[in-house]
Length: 217
Image (cartoon, rainbow, N blue to C red; front, side):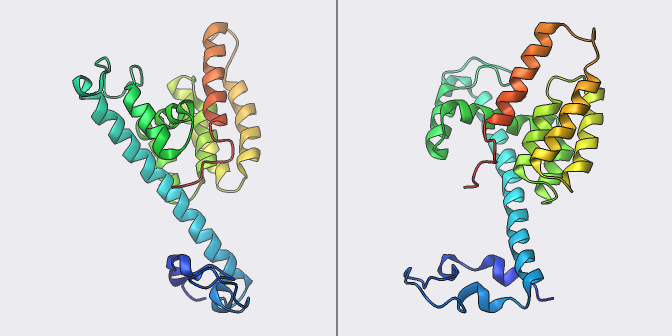
């Protein structure tokens, strides 16, 4: 089978059915004429999807670096001084400018900042799987959402199980597994009702911020 590298790295001018100026061209031109069979065509799409996952991981690392940089300079960004790994006291300017740059509501920008911090500091294995293209951004969001609020031991165990399932399931199917496994780990009496409610609200917000996975920049 031929390498998909050329197919994946072609520029916008190689969009099927269009010439560099956007004029319609015969279907046999562009990508279609470069595939040996359907398997190679599907592999090319899968390669791009893996690249999108890797970019999502890189964005998370970069966004967390930006957050830490802002947190280390409270005098410049009108925010109370906090520890570098805390989300409290996010500089309003950071949230506003990220929201504007990504064209999302400020609440979604905050959720993305929180997601990035969690991936880098609490879920390095999920981040690694995302970077390697083994799971999608939506899978990663599901894992973060359903492990949120659990004790460390339970969180690590659930993450391990979900990472295994994520390689062969859709995000929706993974969510069903995650819900069952999470409820099994939240034994009665282990935490108070207000704590459970707060954790569940945080999980729902994180999962629903980009329910189908945000388009990559």
